[in-house]
Length: 71
Image (cartoon, rainbow, N blue to C red; front, side, top):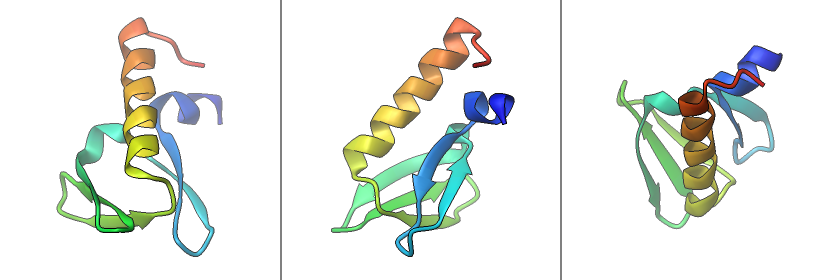
């Protein structure tokens, strides 16, 4: 699970189920009013987190990758 957290961001579906997503697959994030995430595969996810939370988690993911951390 440790390596998983370094490569992924944890999110929550509208039904409360948690999942992890590879942040590098995110094409864009929209608020309409739910938060929609469109992936590079053209799949679309709807999550409980706000647009700002998804962006912040993606930024943190990028920082961890640039630093070369695996934790």
